[in-house]
Length: 233
Ligand code: NAD
Image 1 (cartoon, rainbow, N blue to C red):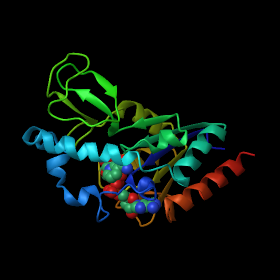
Image 2 (image 1 turned 180 degrees about the horizontal axis):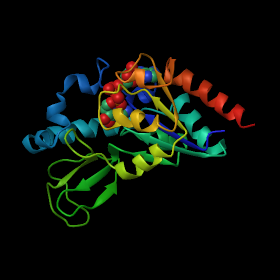
Image 3 (image 1 turned 90 degrees about the vertical axis):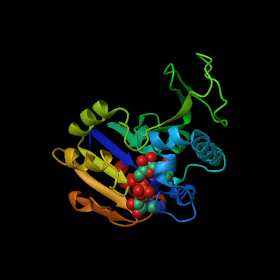
Image 4 (image 1 turned 30 degrees about the horizontal axis):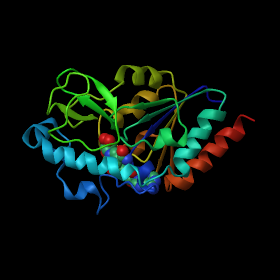
């Protein structure tokens, strides 16, 4: 039985819920340049555009639900006798809505807002603009999405590294292996853990995994979780 399971999830796990990945055509990402909406420079240049983009993404959350992959991972956490931690690159809230508790959002959260002036963070599902006022320091025009943009340091990295070096099973689901440091997690984990990739197509770092499962997360993840739970019975 695995004692310490660490699961890395990417945009692919939420694709079947209807949230576009970076690479999908037709999604919000295809009509915006990453430099404009996912960098600090883009925000400084045009904060109104960046607020609009994240307002749309926040509103989109109201129309989507966790899919069988999110639900299976929450069931794994609840029923597996060892430790199960999910590290997600996703900024949506589908893992928590499926019931996952042990969760680290390394790239921030759409439903979290941060004040650039006083550092106050708060949860909100509403729209923001350059006119919005910080509820703590009352300054205007200082609120930004609590999202890690390109060029910024991901959250919880020290904790994640400790989890990776003590993992005995590392599963990477629906991530392209294009964004570091997450793409490098398999290299750390594979020293002590069995490593598994679940993706519809091989990622850039696929050759570093011990095991490859080709398939959609919504089917492949529940099947894999079922096997893991049966092994502990
Ligand atoms: P990515 O868009 O670079 O890659 C998505 C991966 O998912 C690809 O490898 C693709 O083959 C795979 N995939 C697509 N549909 C799948 C399915 N049904 N089942 C299994 N795999 C599937 O996404 P990424 O690697 O997470 O990388 C980058 C960044 O994108 C992250 O920083 C993340 O914050 C951001 N992002 C997040 C969301 C979200 O919160 N849901 C959505 C888009 C982008």
